[in-house]
Amino acid sequence: MMGLCYCCSLVTLRIFYLIAVVIMNFQALLVTLVGIVGSAPISDKLDIMNKDTIAQAHSLINKILQDIPTTHADWINSKSLTLGDSKTRLELEFLKKDMYIPSAPVLQNISSMETCLANITKGLQLHLNLLEEISKANMLAQTDQVKDLQAEIQELLDLIEELQNQAGFDPSKQASDEQSQTPEHDLAKHLTSEYMTQVAAHLTLQQLQDFSCDILRSILSMTSSMAENPNTVQLCVNAAGL
Figure 1 (cartoon, rainbow, N blue to C red):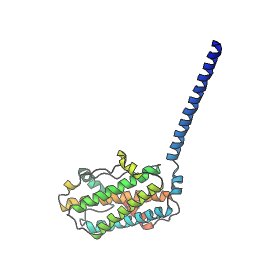
Figure 2: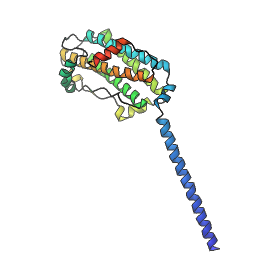
Figure 3: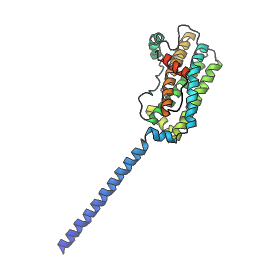
Figure 4: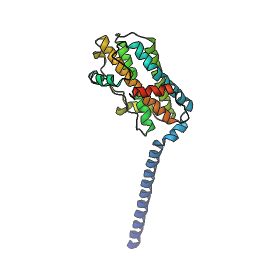
């Protein structure tokens, strides 16, 4: 009788063990499935993004690239500050560091659509903040070109956030992530003269042009059906110093 009870106990323990193994395997499978969904291929994300929104973003980044040189010419009168000039870049690099102008987020060699879009929004917000700080210094003329450029950047920022929502990414979650926070700057205290303010404006517009070229490449990678404007291609070639 005791032997029978012992055998029953062993069978019961074995059943509970098998149940526990099944539950653990199910949980592991569930985690794996969640991971697969969260890291869905870029092509899958593109399928649920509105193509009209992508086209609007493409058109707007082209407009921004065309308007940056016009804004630069209208806002900055110093002949030593030439947009896209490699020599000027090298000469002013130390001033960029001294003025604590943050670098734009990296967009190249990013395989994650979520990270790419998050970095675009972070970079756009950074340049909006810098342009606003320079405008508030009241050292340079408040031209319509500058205001129009700021409005275009804000509109593009709204479109990218719309794409994030369409792809199922949470912009608010990205904003709370330390890595996706807009870099802080301390530019205002360096805008002590008209020339230094022009330098800051030049550095900001130069970096914005470079960053906009990266945005253009990122948007073009989302679809192969868009023909590129040769004017903006040349602007990006010039910006790269090629």
